Image (tube, rainbow, N blue to C red; front, side):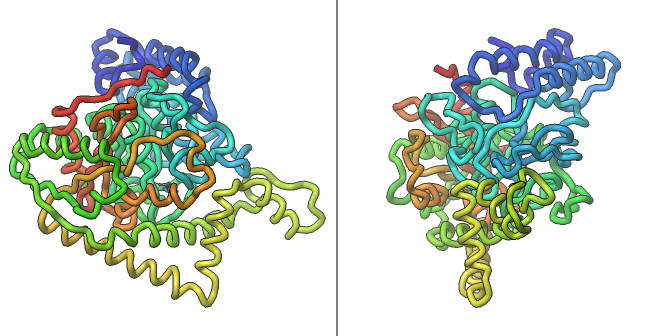
Length: 485
Ligand code: GLN
């Protein structure tokens, strides 16, 4: 086994026992990057020298008896989390040259625990998409099968973790962007409850939906990462002042008496039979482990795509108004007036999908339409939340597929945004309701593509999700690193 294949927990054990150093571990990831990055294409910015220096510092910290939770662990973060002195592009030409003067709180917390940042990974432009194909710089491939998408928008995070280029990564999830790429790449992804993790320094897409979370190779690592990044942050007014449990202690292989709900609306027409088969097997693992399986209904599921694709673009159109060529990023220098400069900068800087969302969002928020669209969508959003609240009277956790199909071929849906939007149907409700969700590897399709299982729980019950995920993982096994061929 090569060092880059270790989990965080496994690597920490070896480093603490003095068997390996962080420099060796980091070098193993850098060699792996050298070997596979030409195919995987996950990195927008790779900082080899800086990483090795940070690894040396981590080794020195450990020798002097100071040992953080991630001391010496090679990590990456999605390129929409601000990193002091390191370019943060959001996958967009408009921020091609943006170097933040500060770290996002989550990045600060990784560093404070001794995490070794290798670089910044690819994503759909401003996190808008489900395949990472709208990234202006690099489009990751699925490490399990070349020519297939890694998912999105945190596709670079998922691909890098699955390929062994880093041990774990941070992504963001506005409508499924952690869970979906995790599912398509055979790793574990966790979207925490809205408010659990600070978003200070996360470049905003849709502020009422965005959350930061980890992508890891197993459930234990996910719990550890959440321990590091979670908790109140006075710099983010949406982060919640609420005690945080030690998520690692939720890792017990015991679901006896736990009620696991199957939402019937998530097993609909169009669901790939192989995906359904994998989820049904997962349900059996839990049943055999003593969980009680109950049928539940989330009757407003049908509306979630329409509601999300109104609320998210509306908020995005407002958030992205700041990219005008004045404060950040590129600027058109040839324009002869201020308005022309704004126009040219935005025309050149944004890609097609981002422009589409800004147009939809601006339209939906314009006077005379606000009540018909944004307000209506917000009302239906409340009904979607109430569906979950009712379901959680009957069960402790929901189990379902993450996506209707395994990863599709690159370019397959590039001219059909609606088909891509519809594929988000199983993940976006969690964001609309603000509840936590997870994707756990469930198996592979006949074509060798990973298929994940989704767990969703009540607000702030990440501990229950982790416990169920851990039991599933024990029953099913981890996918490990992809060979990349
Ligand atoms: N696929 C969804 C979208 O395009 C979700 C993206 C996300 O979670 N960032 O908006």
